[in-house]
Structures are given as structure tokens and as C-alpha cells.
Length: 199
Image 1 (cartoon, one colour):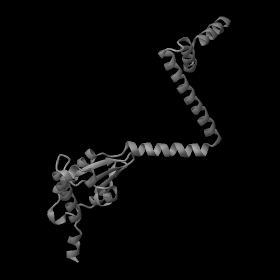
Image 2 (cartoon, rainbow, N blue to C red):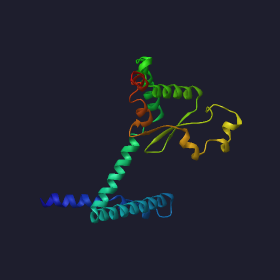
Image 3 (cartoon, rainbow, N blue to C red):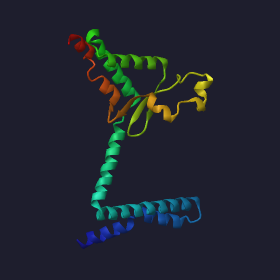
Image 4 (spheres, one colour):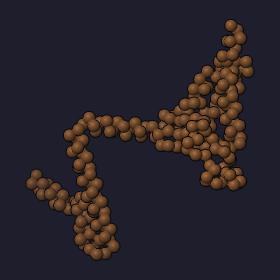
């Protein structure tokens, strides 16, 4: 048993923490490129170690605040990971368009039908754009196709401003769904005009 303890203590003496290893490396190659490199990584390791120790001690003092911060970060991470992209928007648009073709003309929702036709025209012209804001994604309309080479399409001063974006928003994607498209297509097979005519 004593021999095993002695072997374990010798083994621990041989093993070094990353900080100790970098200190010995910077002292051994002092003044050289390797020494400067080791010194840089040693300081970086010590800084991060200090931050980790302080964070842990503060989180133990205020567990409710720590829980709130981790919950917020987790929610933001989930929102960012489920943000839909333009490919998902186009895919959903085609699925709804196919569903709409299976519904007869008299019972189609005119609002949903107009929306699908209009978006298809925008795609034909090539003015649909997508911008990702991390936790949400926005489909918006540009003035020109990206391949257009006329002056007004290339000049930065003539491009759409952020103040005009509210009028140009086509859809907003959040939590894996395009919300405007989803709401418009909710009752795409119900024509309210049909019920008005019957009353």
C-alpha cells in the first residue's frame, strides 16, 4: 500500500497543470519566440482561470440570478438554433402552393391566394431577400434583382433604408416558423365571401 502511495505521489509530481507547464516552458526558452509564445498562453490561461473562479464564487452567492442568466442564455441559444432560413421559407411556400392547387377556386381564401401569387411574382423578379438577425430572420423586398447592373441598383445611397423596412417586410421567421405565411395560410380553404353570399 505504501509503495502504491509513493508511486502515485511521484506520478502527480510528474504531471503538471497547463499553467505550470507553460511557466516552465517560458522559463526554459526565455527570450526566444517559443518563450514569448509560452508566456502569452500562460497569461491567457491564468486570466481565464481567474474569470472561471470568480464566476463560480459569484454564482454560489446569487443562485437565482445565475439561474435567470443561464435560462436567458439557453432561450437565446434555442431561438438562434431554430431560426428558419430562406430555403425553409421557399420550401414552405411551395408546400402551401401545392396545397392550394388541391382546393377548388370557389372555396379558396382570396387573401391567401393573393399572397402566394404576389410572392411568386416577387421571386420571378428576383427582389426577395433574407436577413438573419440571430434569433429571428426577416424576408424583405429589394428594389432590384441582385444581378441587375444599372446605377440605381449599385449606388449605396439609393438602396432601401432601414426606416423603410417596415413597408418592405414580407415575413418574419422565429422559433422555426414563418409567422405571416403561417397566419395567412391557416384557413386557406375557407372563402369568407362564399358565406356572405349565402346569408
